Image (cartoon, rainbow, N blue to C red):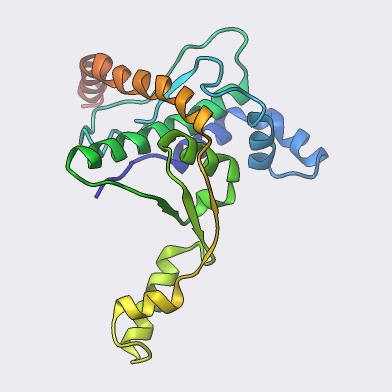
Length: 219
């Protein structure tokens, strides 16, 4: 099992604090704000023109189990804009997922695909980056809210409709479509994944020093 502490919450933080000027533009084009950001970010290259985001806004769960890890955005130049940072945040989250997959592989597990559910499914842009970074296909379920579907499966077994959970899942979980990774983009992303991993390892002590200093100041 592996998990990331911050994913959608980082994107929401970015939207709430830095995207006020895009609200009217999105409305003019008849788009939601995230739709506009995705549309603009799709036109940027892999790696967001040299930006790397470390997604530790609330520490790291897997693989470091480090509550004092902190988020970072580095590589900024004057040519970068809001869309670059948005794409880099999405990419950084995907790098974190890839690091979890690498950790699982180190323990003998070999992921073959990603079965996606929840809020991120609303963004094909985000899901495609996940596939490209990790070089794994992503399967989408027809019911994208896994908790709701899981509750229904448990209820079906409890009501005697199906004899066990496996049988219930076989009948109640259906896939809608699947996206495949792009090999050229995957190859380019490996450069940035390595920089993502190296950033934490090289900055860890500084992160801890600052986190502890702030904690002491707050008493």
